[in-house]
Length: 269
Image 1: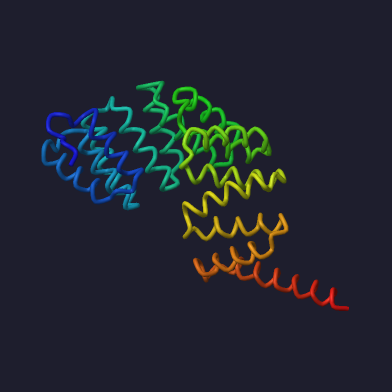
Image 2 (image 1 turned 135 degrees about the horizontal axis):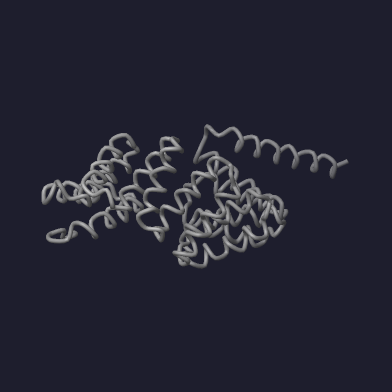
């Protein structure tokens, strides 16, 4: 159990964010409860409580706690940034941008606020502005796989696939266990007709995430392009088992079976 005695502010808020990213809701809830009990007027304790509700996808309640933290310490840049994240979740992009800019006014090197603004611009399809802000964030935190991933996606959306691929290579290098970066890289590799490399990435992902139907289906698509029809059919069938409601998976099986039947009929003539 994390010992919070005597070290709330400057520790608890960041540890609670780590628990948020790890989706460890029980531990996060326990941390928030203990932090509030120790000092309910601590901004860090308020952020821990807000992160707890954020993880439960309750942005309105999360914002109540984050705003309390801002009220307790108006110069707390991280509190403003977390407000921005929840506003962005609610798609209140103007309020999100205002919160992020307040954070940067207090701390110009607060890379999560730079990322936040970039993420809002990405949502608004303002890709050039998004790229600028992601690059600043990455210059401040160059070892972040997540920032590389977002920049790589932004470049790809601008049609700059080779540049996007280069940045996504960095994302995977920095964190080989980052599944989103590897999956995005596989899709770009497929689009660039680098099918063997895409197949390798997707095979790794299927081993790590065997219950992710989209990953299994994408592996089937690449296998089909490589002429590996039995592997493709097996992947499509597995995808249907994982998500029976997705019509695209069933259609892929039907089209492949029809193709096989036509070729068999032609061969027998």
